[in-house]
Length: 124
Image (cartoon, rainbow, N blue to C red; front, side, top):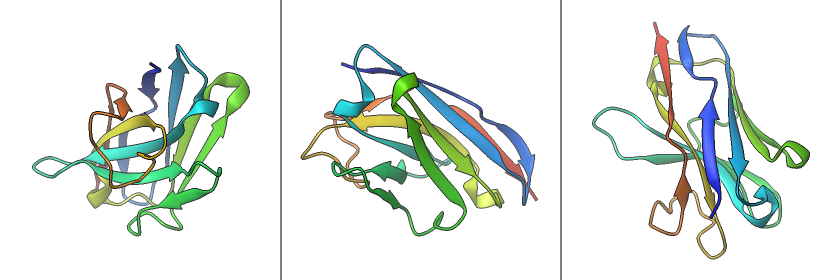
C-alpha cells in the first residue's frame, strides 16, 4: 500500500497561484493512477485531476485551463500547479492513488488511498 504526504497548501488572494506536492512511499507511483481530490466545507470530496491508466490526464471542468497535474517518477512525486485561483477553489486538497478498475475521478471508495490533505484558502 502506498503512503502519501501532501504539502504546498496555503492562503492566497484570488488570481494567485499555488503548487501542491505529494510524495509517495512504500510503492512506486508508476503502479497507480495518481490524482488530486478536494473537499470544501459542507461539500462532498470531488475529483480535481488525475492520470489515467494510459498516462493521459483528465481534469474536472471547474479547473480546466487553470490547473495542471504532473508527476516525477524518479522522485515518486505528484504535483498540482494551480493558477488563477478563485475563492471557490478553497478546500482541503488530497493526493490519492488507485488501480484499475478504480481509476476514475468519480471514485472515492475504499480501493483508493489518500494522503492527510493540505489546506488551500483563496480570499477575494
